Length: 481
Length: 138
Image (cartoon, rainbow over all chains, first blue to last red; front, side, top):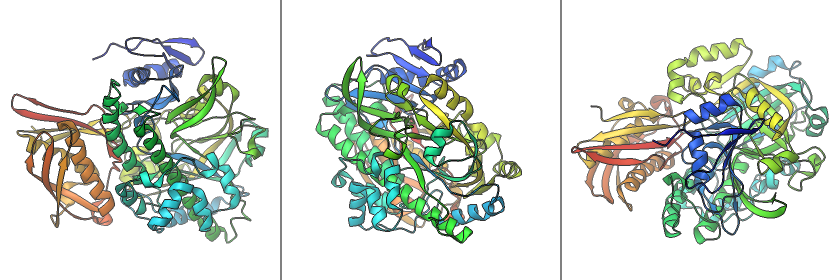
């Protein structure tokens, strides 16, 4: 058993884990004292320290306030590696490659259409397959799959699953370059084929939400958001395709790390030099999974728009169901960052962390460039989710990153023991939240009390400057697997 | 002592499996993993899938074995309830997994296991008894 990790607060909400042992850089955690203590107890800080031992890591091994124990890398972790000297690690991205969130606006006032929400939630649950082992309506043949993997969302638009203007509102314009479909194995394809157009299970969801509060009127206006508005949020990932790619790559990388003479504090940290055959192959396969995940969220958006059309008997265009933004929180990307006065290309790993680029950054869509990148942070189904904006401070503090959600505090089985799914459903419905879950028993695993306080997590990011609050959204209806 | 027990971390679930032999250890680990997905008493013996694998060491062999079963479950929609390891060494395994086609109404699936991880992975033998620890990404 390792010693207790020592840390100290260097500026408000910023804690340093000093270098010890094989750590090449210090650890840096954005949190308050309570969250630090919890992260220490569950060994998540030790994981931040382990990542600091990997070759080519720049500045610090970081974690956002929603930090919790993960396998290998902590969830909420951000680590940037030098392009020449550094490594890339599938474990630093996670199994659910490009898991992410998208927010869809509307011209509807939630108050005026309150009586339609239960019907809408029901319609969404009918049209969008969710839950373990549930297949989708949309079957891809292998040529279509190749196109999804290499070109991303543009495939969906060619099929009529979306609007041309959706593309600008997706990180990287809906296609991460450098994807090589040939590197996606038959097995990964097989797992992906049966699951395209499905939501998945676990913490993935579709929520109908009401904009409860606006904090930043200028940014809200730029994002097309107003108080009382009805919105839709989708949280899903790359499904079995991404899981299979990560599974295969972790195995290959374990061998690659050994050959490169990299000592791993944990096998799940398996990695390879960025500039090596294994490193390049992982990036190209990961990028293909990223394109798959975003296309899948695009297909889900299409199905959701159709559900709205059915319930409101009006076209999605007239309902104003535009895409606000789509952002991934499990990814590795090459980005330009300024480090000690020098511009460098870094491979930024975000595992349960969201990109948070400021106003004026070329990576931010033109229509938002005056205010900054929309950051979407999903909360638990009983509390709230947030729309934030990226900041200049995030660029200098956290390689342009902020939190990705509330972060769990209770294990899934512990939640099942403590909470009855049936009672939870009744409680949420008494609070005016319509719930459609594939299995009521599984609902308990995602209960609000199983998560950290989203308000606290977002507030810390706001005060530390990693992102700024734009709007708080309250759930009105939830579709779960 | 049980064939396996469930261990839990904040965001993930794992199992600790036991066995008098490496063979029974691997069978129990598979049963433990599938017990998280579905109540084993609901799964009938209707089809048999042969599995044959090689890996570089015993730990990796265990991860490969469980990943293989997870792949068959997801890609072929087969739910497994019983496992027989026919032959096993440190790096090689031949086995048969018994189960049936997935029926979402009857099987009432629970956890969505995305993958078998290498985190905290351990296969040990003490006093003639085998023990393995595996964490899943859910």
